[in-house]
Image (cartoon, rainbow, N blue to C red; front, side, top):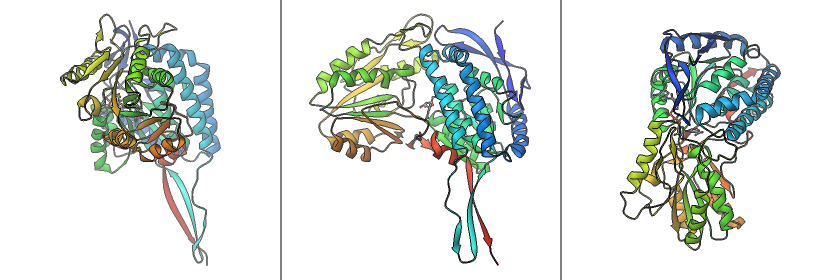
Length: 477
Ligand code: NAD
């Protein structure tokens, strides 16, 4: 009998109302490893009720008290890091070493928000009208609904609950139906640290549980990290109550590589930039634009670097890439590659196929010859597939890089500081890296432009989003 993971409401692990469960699968083996409670709108109602009740007292705590609670939460997760990493690796299929990195990110993030809770900023108080003193208050919003994706379940839970709880809100969190296990462990481990009702976790399908959260009138803000499709669905549900909506959606990061780079070094860096987490990363390097002066040499180095990626058992120490998250996603990724081949100019330089056998593995893939307008360039594949296109000058590179509906992250590679600065300014993305890619820090914001959504995760900007700004004015007689 597999372990049954229940829901977490009002500080208790409890059965969902229907008592029904769904299977949770290890994507590296295809085997069922656990069962997740299938919630419905009625469970969401109970969780929101608990969160609303808890909000009445949580909002009265001082920043120092909230900070201390978050520090304790970070400490307990750190002490249980191996347990979290193993569960995350088994549920998401990511190499164990990478899962350990995700736990560290979670801990660092929660510690950052513990500090940030005590550092909220605003305009200075003063007499902007004679005899009237104005001051800014940052009030918590209330019950926040958080919806997370499957690619970094624990880290994304941290991005959501850290700022929400630090600012004095309470949370109802719905993890992905594919990867709820580390979030449920987090909930269980928070007992005795977070007061009952401050964090609640309900599990189940997006269009049932996520949608119920998004439309609930007592949920005052809904924050989703996921696909554009889910973001739009949540925004539609939220419109009836005009709640605050925060969306971290898909990406299709361009990488602009100028002719002065060290070719083997940059080609090697693309192994991580493009294939970390099997390319299932919203900031993954997916569209490589390479100066035509170095294109052939770069592509040859890139192909040998990508061929060297060790794909396999996430538990093996030397594994660099695990499986994709599910059979359906594996077929989806393969579909993108097959459709790309319908352009006769397209060449699959390496990879391009499903790896047969147990688990949902795909070959690390490099595609050349696609046109800027092709689906493979314009749509998010969310798998281990990168494309390479040559450019003749800076103008053309920037134009192609910006020519996409997604605008989350990007990078530029050059030793020329003037060229880097000009490119940074003109790339229309929420993040622009120079000579690096995928590097995140808790102190800096993460969030997109255009169809990649709105609102920031991480950093003080995120904390501010989980507050309402109030102007209080006092007339002095
Ligand atoms: P998804 O959109 O399928 O699911 C994300 C979450 O939304 C899940 O919890 C799901 O149950 C829920 N959901 C789905 N439909 C819903 C609906 N109608 N109403 C409410 N909730 C709903 O995404 P995914 O496949 O889990 O994750 C991959 C996507 O997430 C990619 O597009 C990726 O780029 C994006 N992502 C973005 C970021 C970022 O920071 N911008 C980070 C990670 C992932």
